[in-house]
Image (cartoon, rainbow, N blue to C red; front, side):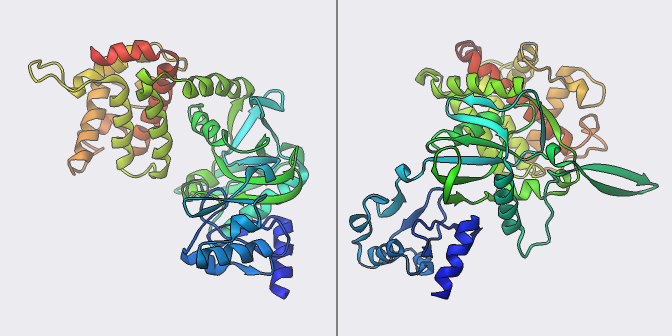
Length: 408
C-alpha cells in the first residue's frame, strides 16, 4: 500500500521515470511504457514492472500473462491492437508540448500555429511541471541544461574562458509551449515542419490532461527523446544565449504544414526529403555521417541518376549548377560567403561535395590544407543544414518546378 501511495503522489506531480511515462488514471498504481503513447505489449519483460493496487494495471498484467482481460474489463480506457494495449485518446482532453529550443520570441503572443495548436508562454503551474520533468531527466547524471531563466555572459582572459549565468526576471523566462486539444495527432508534424525555421523548433516532451485548456488531472507524459536530451545538455547549447524567433516566422508553419500534408503523390519525394531531414536529428551534428545525410537530401531534391553517355551529368556537376541557381530563389539568403573563406560559389560547392565523398570513402579530410576554405566540419554542417531548410521550403512551394528540374 505504501508503494501505491508513493506512486499516487508522484503521479500528481507528473513525474516521469524508468523506461517511459507513468500513466495512473485511477491513482493507485503506475504503468511504465517505452512507446510515445502508453502502449504495453503482451508478454514483454517490462510488464513485470506494473505494481500497486490499480485494477487497470492488474487487468493488463493478467492480459499479458494469458492473452485476455484488459480491454474487456476496461473498454472505456484501453483497446487492443496487435497485442498492444493502447490508451483511448477520448480520455485525453488536452495537452501541451514543451519547447526545448532556446529561443526568444518577438511579437504578440499567444499565436495559433495551426487550428487547435497555440504557441504561448508556459503558465506558472506548467513551469513547475516542466522543471520537475527536467530534474527527473537529469537525476543521477552530471549534466546541465539550457538556461531558460538566465542569460550567459562570456568572459575571456588569455586562453581561458569563464561563463557567467545571470538570472532574468520571471516575466522574461523562456519557457514556451504549444498547447493543443484534444490529442497529439498533428503535434509531431508541427515539429517536423518547425525544423525548417531559421532556428529549429523542437519539443522536449508532452504532457496530457484530463480536461480542456490544459487543466484537470495529468493523464500521461511522453518521455524526452534521447537526441533531444543529448543536444540540449551539450556544451554548445548550455552555454549559448537564446536565438531570436519572430511570430511572423512562426506563422509560416501553417502554410508549410498544409503543403506538407497535402503534397500530391507525384511529388512525394518532397515530403520524403522533409521526413529524412527530421530523421537526421538522431545523428549527432559532429558526426561525419551528418554531411552524407544532408547531401543525400540535396541529391534527392535536385538530381537524377547520371547518364553514362554524358560527361557533364555527374551528381557533383548537377548539384553545383542547380544549387547555385536555386539559391537565388530562396526566401532567406544562404550564400557561401556568410560561412566560408572567400572563393567562388562553384569552387565552394565542389569542395563541399569533395568533403562528402572523402567521408563516404573513409578518407580523412584536412581542413588545414585541401579543405581549408571550408574552415571546419561544424561550419560545413551549419551551411548545409541552412541550405537544406531553404531548399525544402522552396520544394514545398514549387514542387512541380523542382520535379522538372530534377530531370534536367
